[in-house]
Length: 268
Length: 231
Image 1 (cartoon, each protein chain N blue to C red):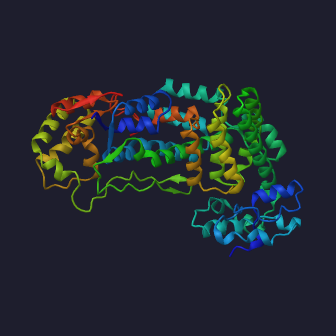
Image 2: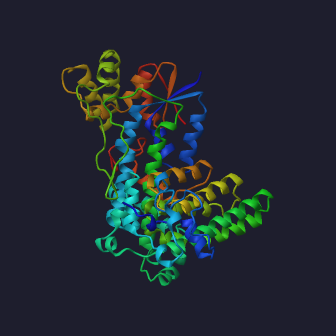
Image 3: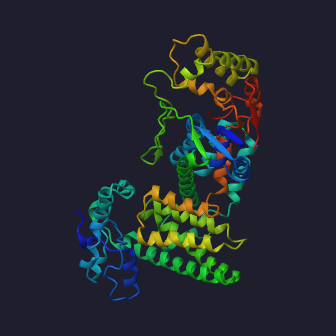
């Protein structure tokens, strides 16, 4: 049976991306007889991509202006070309409700709604709806959801006064992290993954190596939510079942880790 | 407690507007304020006087609370609005009801045309639908975010149907949304999301391309160089 162990990038492309990325994710999932999503991917999804898009929603509520939001995103992402593309598209967009008939509607109902007000409301609703739909569908992307994390609170995202709650909703382990005992059961694999992570020489690799060091060398130390998140791609290499392949768009980072443990990575 | 005279179904209101003398009688369980069983007898107490066509926002909001749903409408009300007891005219319910009915009828026509593969007629019906939607969205602020989200999604979906004819299933899903809105215009966002998901599942595009662009911009691509962007 052809099985895929699905990583967070596929979940993101399927739930929060549109067009080619979504289609590619859907098609790739259909290639396998069985697709398995570990709850760790949901945890990463929630703390990263979901959180970031919820931030965009909240920022739009605060700024009450779509062009302003796009400029702020540009300032933080430092991608002037991307920003000008979005702004240009926004300015020329004909598919947003109302702009053409807005003056007539204002006259008819004695209102004073501006185009930006109108479009801001449309996009705010669209962002909220996208996030809510993504959350509802998170466990429907694959045929199975596996490897539950007892310390991860997979609660529905909360909205307070029109804003998504700020918390990243990570783990809240009452005792030890649920992953640690499994990781410690195979210290040799942890050491291999740590060496590979160190060799990757990226900030993410360094964080991962540090988290794995905690598991291997200082087992008594508290392994918290941050350490758990820092495991990142190492989680997938370690926990991917032997008869499965890791399905990810990020083969660059996953391949060395997976091959170190004799496992395979496939692209969508 | 919600008084029975405070609530009527939107269908009833629309029928009364069309001059149906029986319109004040309860036709189905689609009470405007609450569709739970204990509300089933509410409309039977209504009379046809204009006074009874007033929707009291407090009663409406309370009814939502009674049903255990978060009341976005209540949250958005000022104290003045709470105590004023706004009329139907103020809340634009009359126009909303008429527009919902019009769109429902147009979609019914489009479905009949689709069944006989008269694609030109289908598009003609949809042109009328698209014409009414901006006004409905404009007025949706009176009915809260759930209603507005349904209209937004329908607009997005129908705007993509300009170049290719919809299937019968897609038209049916669109019409179903309007049927539900006619019965329960004060829809909670959770329900609205469920309803618009059905449009997406039927193969319709309900998200603006700008959302995709914003998602691309704020979600860090792990294949890009590390530590850039909003993490």
